[in-house]
Length: 103
Image (cartoon, rainbow, N blue to C red; front, side, top):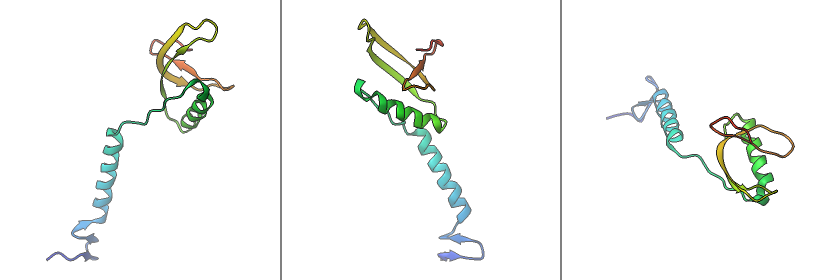
């Protein structure tokens, strides 16, 4: 019969505490790698919220991918691009596409 607490060997229910900790860390790492990150959608009147969310993520060292669908204000031509958001100031967002163009 297995003792519940084996103080001589440092085991609980036959499992070493350090081994249990390593298994929990591995399970957490696999779960965080497999799970899909959250996606957010912002409308035109929510741009300041989008900028604040980006600045919060950027300050913590995260890369933020964005897909932007909209129109230009001056001539209403459609705009649809995707890429990485870059740090900026003045309440603006800058987008760098895969070909290196910055908007």
